[in-house]
Length: 167
Image 1 (cartoon, one colour):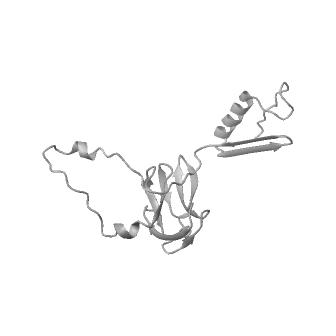
Image 2 (tube, helix red, strand yellow; image 1 turned 90 degrees about the vertical axis):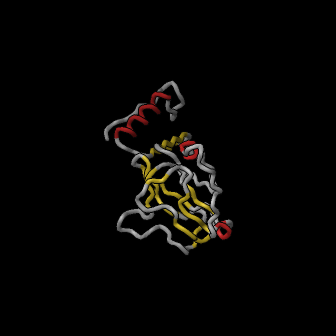
Image 3 (cartoon, helix red, strand yellow; image 1 turned 135 degrees about the vertical axis):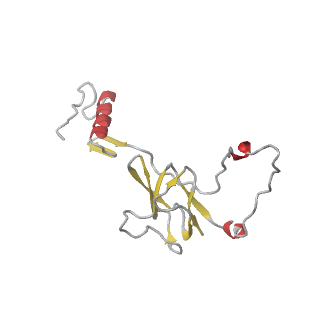
């Protein structure tokens, strides 16, 4: 790389000023780096680009503008309860923490991270979501058995969209 950032002499020997940190960020962008970590005696800095994956569980409510597009004369239909709803009550959902593309495997040639019937732990990687050319590993965040893979491989997912259901 050849680029270096001089440490400012007015600060303690291992500290960086804001301008130095901004230069590090610019170098990360220039070299397409997603993470940078520097540790020296008495000093530590860690920079990451993009979002950290956050797993949410439980139902997510959405406001749907579809009802506003319906003609006023149309009768309001009662929401249908699927027959399997009672059995899904004991399932936990792994929802998408971001907008991106869902991938069930690390590469097209590889096997899926998880399959239906597979036991998972909190730290088990269940999929990848690509957002802005960054591959974000999504973890189960709970113990159980994969009951359903909801998202489709290679397809876009929205924030809060269910990816998996775990029993």
